[in-house]
Length: 390
Image (cartoon, rainbow, N blue to C red; front, side):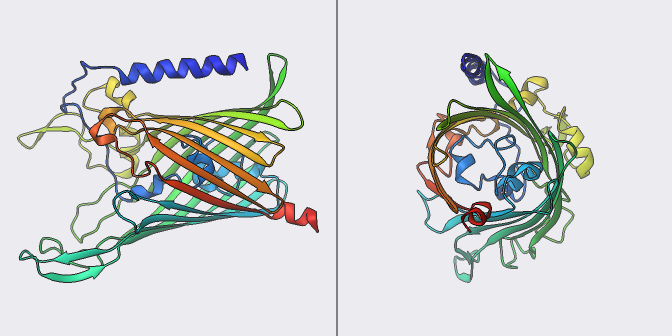
């Protein structure tokens, strides 16, 4: 465990190194965030990962693995399971914006597992008015994504998975904006993921090592009008590792680390309509993925600031009660989100109930988190345990 503590200290130094740079002034004037369509695809849907700083690519597999890393589904212990999550959004400002998430899996055999997910994001009520302020319509905008996944073990320690999803985003209900007719945005996307797990020994103790990677939302751009303007969806690279150990029959603990990077073009710097730094973002999806590794106007230093870091830990007692905590870091010039997370979980026979709570830790004006001071919960059903009871 001393080595694990050393890793945490080293990570803290890295976070501080990125955060403390008062002289930083890149060509964009400092702030140069990357924006995409349908950002709801990146919202952490489950309370377990939400309580651990949004880590999940290499943690233990469960019904919510399709979001974090579908390749983990090949290593689930039970034959079938599903989970339901509810995430209030901007609850401090409005009461009717929320994300609902339903996910489940079914093992076909010892090596193959299929999964399915439904994500629904409600944006409340919008009143449309004309230039005189006269009400011309009322609409409840919403977005949803329906996905499925297939995971297969290639060996006793390694698995691969591929996922596909349909994305639908209707933000205007067909109302015209600026005299331009609008339509619902639609896209088809895929994920490619891998997962590796291996027992090792650290300081004479048995430790479960896991490594995961997931490139998610590889799909076509979205347009909300019939013009040629199309926006990237949030293609995302997630890499991470986790270590877990059992102290005795009643106590076990794990620690996990994730890094994330959007694989879409960084906005360049324009001057008189011409790009003076960076690269043209109007490229194909495939070109945008490769371009995203070297197109930041501020060079390599800015590219490194586009990486987000998450670290989390989990403690279980008697496989019935869990305590979790975590931290998420995003550089101020790329959104400024920094927050601590806490949570707990209770497991009893056929179901488990998880809670999470987020505390904003950012001093940046742009770093306020829509989930700050918000309680989230997830209900997980374990059908393997149900079979054992029968």
